[in-house]
Amino acid sequence: MRSGAQPFSLILGSSSRTRQQLLKELGYEFVVMRPDIDEEAIRHPDAERLVRLLGHAKADALLAHLGDRSRLDEQRAEGKPLLLITGDQVVVHEGRILEKPQDATEARRFISSYR
Image 1 (cartoon, rainbow, N blue to C red):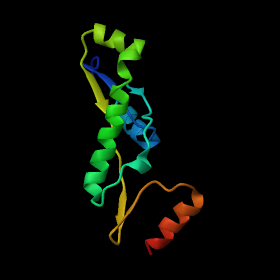
Image 2 (tube, helix red, strand yellow; image 1 turned 135 degrees about the vertical axis):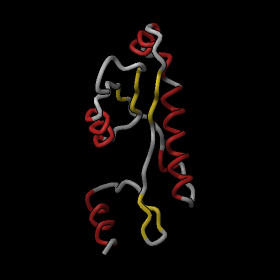
Image 3 (cartoon, helix red, strand yellow; image 1 turned 30 degrees about the vertical axis):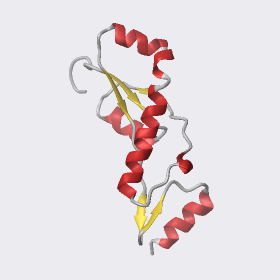
Image 4 (cartoon, rainbow, N blue to C red; image 1 turned 120 degrees about the vertical axis):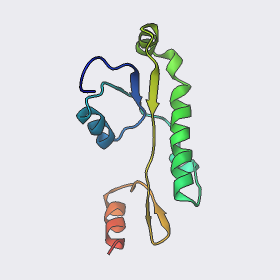
């Protein structure tokens, strides 16, 4: 935010350094919470639907823990609305959904397949 205090408390429900950097560059203050979900257990053949399901699962997991966080209670006491941002992304290549590579070998295989 460019001027004045942020009118809401912001939680980024993601371990993505890129998402964190984007919010920092935009001037937002935020707390990072990493959702603990089994992403492999969530499947759908449609990429758009899959990322929605993953984002919702992350939000649900984090919302289940928010009441136990004293910092969040303080922010609520200040009367600020709480904004939770979660999401996911996948690559679709030749009709296949490719998610986060598990290791460097898989990442190289993904990149090689784009040729």
